[in-house]
Image (cartoon, rainbow, N blue to C red; front, side, top):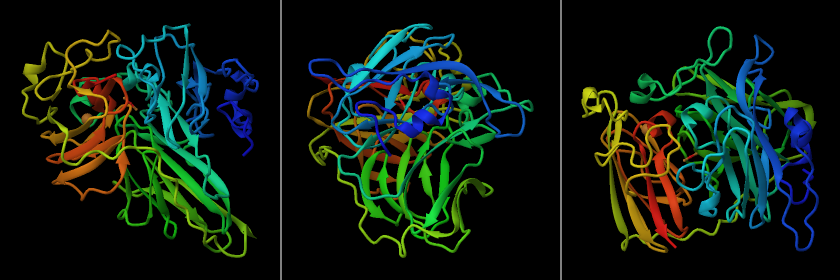
Length: 472
Ligand code: C2O
Ligand code: CU
């Protein structure tokens, strides 16, 4: 794909849709001048969430599309984007999974002020890691994400592995009424105390059932992002031996031993490398198998045409990103006991007044009152000198799974009880099952104030958020 140098978007993305119209072409980088920032406005618009059938839905959209435009940055090179807030409310952009400077992390009240309606904010950072990431607001995210504000950010490897196609599937779910209107009541108490806002309609990159055309013996890199507010996805690609090559943006394997399905909590990503082996007209569906098997998307072989006479045999391993291995023994150990929610230990009546239904170590909403953009209040969960290893011991005493997400760092899963055996992956978001205890480790090497929260966005807003500080 041809890239405009110093820009975040490819030609294809620019031509792809309404987003294109809003995007001015940044020039090439000149000596002594700052890299021009790519403009990206969030607006209120309408999108065909159910495809051709039925009325369009009013959504909030980066660049005018859901999901927002696919942004491309390059590993080790500066990326600049000017966010224009054309929404009726304050917002901001968080770059999920990127280990960038704290001031660019996009968390109102902690790393920046919320960007007021009509205002702009320039993000400028240099991603150290290549991989599949995504962006979304961190301001009332329990409302702004399910209204449509999310998009993929790909940081390209300096030396990418051979692939004929690079396909990104960003999965969102929507709660629609009979007229395709988004059901209001974001952040309802019912959603908060249960599994969060689950939609009744799923789209893959904005499409209810996309088809991607492939040729026999193509090698396809497939990037899958769970951008749902609360839904856990158990996905199967019905192809022979899809190879898992990255988790949460960080290279793994390649491996085919990930069980029957790929489990993605909200916020998680996987990269697969798949060789298209099959007869003419063959179809490879992506199915969600949590309940009734649901086809979400498909790869469709184009007739009898072949990319090459036989599938590629070249290896697909990605170059590891520059992450420091956590010390397995010498660490600051942080216990994090998760309680609350429906059928939890806490009596619902005891929650009245605080507005919070979940607790970390007995404290609800360590950072912010639910949904408010106030400056950070309260104490951090921990403070740590830069370079020290931290072990967080997640102890899920609730009856719900939680997707625990750490900002500015990736972690290893060091130990797990009452859950699947730990895999040798790096994560930024870890699904912790009810009754599970998991110890994760990371080197706190990125100075600043960082959030640690459940990525089930209604849980985040009702007590499951905290922050920590890495001293400069
Ligand atoms: Cu994807 Cu704190 O967020
Ligand atoms: Cu949760």
